[in-house]
Length: 141
Image 1 (tube, helix red, strand yellow):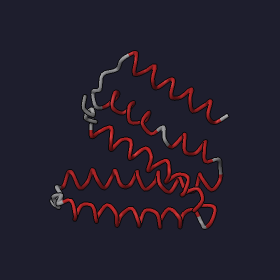
Image 2 (tube, rainbow, N blue to C red):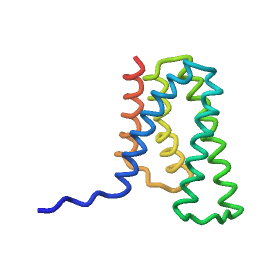
Image 3 (cartoon, rainbow, N blue to C red):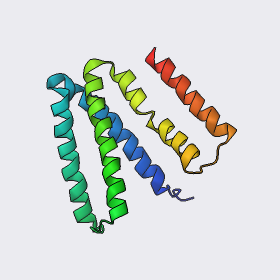
């Protein structure tokens, strides 16, 4: 009996979960040690160097199409807004509440997917999103 193969999406999704969980805790400490806006900028700068370095060493294509560049730019804009607001929120409130609300971004993406991108609307998905909302209310108490 061999070791089962793990789906790479699960591996990278898990790495994302752990990394972002650690980022929130360390980001909270940073936002208590310095101006949270400056902490966000320093953190984003380090992330930028990491991302660019990964592109270089991975041999990824450096071709930027007009549509892809524009979409990536808009994605970066909203990522930056979320990033800065997370640091400011951490400096003003509970890590538990701010991180839980921030982690609910998937609800926004799911609603956009169903409303604008043609993703199937099912009872199970709606129930899951409603339960996620209940979870946030419970955690925020």
